[in-house]
Length: 180
Image (cartoon, rainbow, N blue to C red):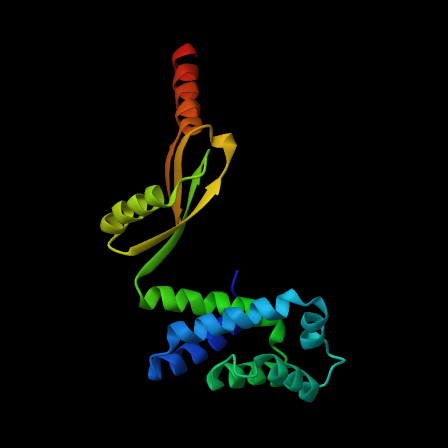
């Protein structure tokens, strides 16, 4: 769950990106930096540690970001260091992504199947759902053999359950009502 602090910081960076039409680029750069930070356990700990001075954290970030990040992103990270909010960076990124998705009319979801879908099948499903919801649907395929077959789609708070397991449970419920 994304907290209110993360949303405020994300909103601030998003507004800056909107002014120069850089929202997508800023999101990509922020996630690239998160990947770099998370790839090194020592770096991750140092940036979050209260024992490391703010100046040392900024120097670490400067060394990492040399030529890889827009000044907006770099300055944003420095503000996070100054306000002791580096531990919120992932939540800020998630909140920023929500803002970006809203701007681009994107709704992300999951399609759960017993076997992996190929890209063509996912694209067809995305197109059908996009026309139904009047949004650009982006689906992530998750394989769960427990559903036996069919498709379970989760979009936000909505769920479309066309799985064999659901049909069997429904049939079982109907049979138990007939028998009782």
